[in-house]
Image (cartoon, rainbow, N blue to C red):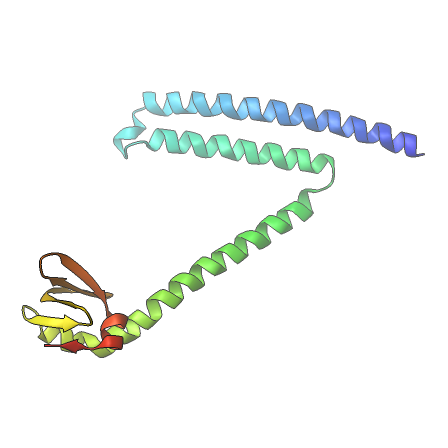
Length: 164
C-alpha cells in the first residue's frame, strides 16, 4: 500500500515539475511578446513605461497561476492561500495602523495650533531649537525659512510651543 502511494507521489512530482517548468517558460515568453506588442501599439504614449508594466503584470499573473496549479497537484492550494491571505491582511493592517497612528495625532494637534500659526505667516518664530520666518501653512505642518527651509509638523509645534 505504501509503495502505491510512493509511486503516486512520484507521478504527482513529475506532473508538478513539468507544469512548473512549462508555466515559467510560457510566462516569460508571453511577457516578452506582450511587451513587444504593447510597444508596437505605442501604449507608452499614455504613460512612460506602461507597456513594460502591463506585460510584467500578465507575466506574473501567469506565474501565480502556475504556482496554483502545482500546489493543486498536492492539494495544498487552500492552506497556502489561507496563509498568504492572513499574512497579507496582517501586513495591510500593520501599514494602515502605522500611517493612522502617525497622521491622527498630527491632525489633532493641527486643529489646535493651525489658527495660531496661520496668523504668524511671514513673521519670525521659534519652535524648539528651530527658528525662522513662517512661509507656508499646510494640513500636516508648516514651513520655516531661515538659512534653510524646515518643515515643522503640528504635533512638534504643539509639544514644544511656538514663540514669537
